[in-house]
Length: 279
Image (cartoon, rainbow, N blue to C red; front, side, top):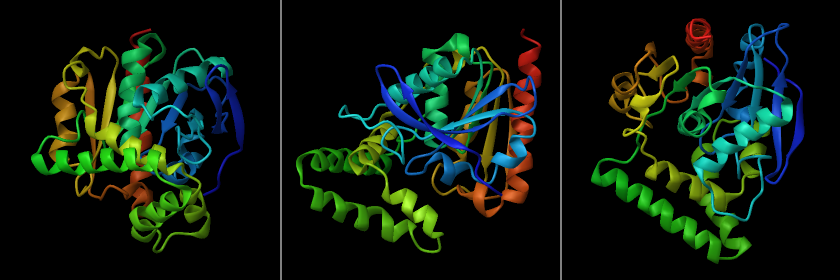
């Protein structure tokens, strides 16, 4: 497994972001790989670039506040991330594409359809949901992130560094390769905390039924981050949808990649084939 070429990309009026890009076969349809919370394009998708690149043109950006994504003074909004995707497509001359979203990236993919419907040929939603905070415990957890996000905007750089160490690096750093830890350390932690709060407030249940393009849902059946029933509810909310199940945890894209990657390829191919019938 290797990382494809990456480059900085200036988005007019929005800022500079970073993308990985695979050209794919001549005339290949384009997919946008949209990573999850606290990840980057590299961290989330390094296991899939080679296989998916044999079939599709791939654009994989870092989202705002994550890795080398847009550095903005404005608070983090999932809607801005969705608009960034459309802006990247504009700069690259891409008319239509399939957003493939993992966890938080799944919320962004849904918002890309809602805000830029004419650009979206289909949706692939992986280990994600239409809403994330329903129970009292979940709401309290995301309220805590909201409070930390406010605190992070008011406190010193030293405090942010301490939060980075306490809240994430100790929890996630064990067993990871040095390059992965280095990427995590490059996040803007104010934005990371704000992003966690935004995920907790996300709810597409009232409008997801209006999605009029084919979709595939990849469900990790041992997921302890996004509840399985929350993932499966997407199957009831979406119309033209199929399901792809993997007996793995939220990080199955890494830990079970020999199984996960062909499954993901099948899910994207299914959406692409069905989307051609709509043209």
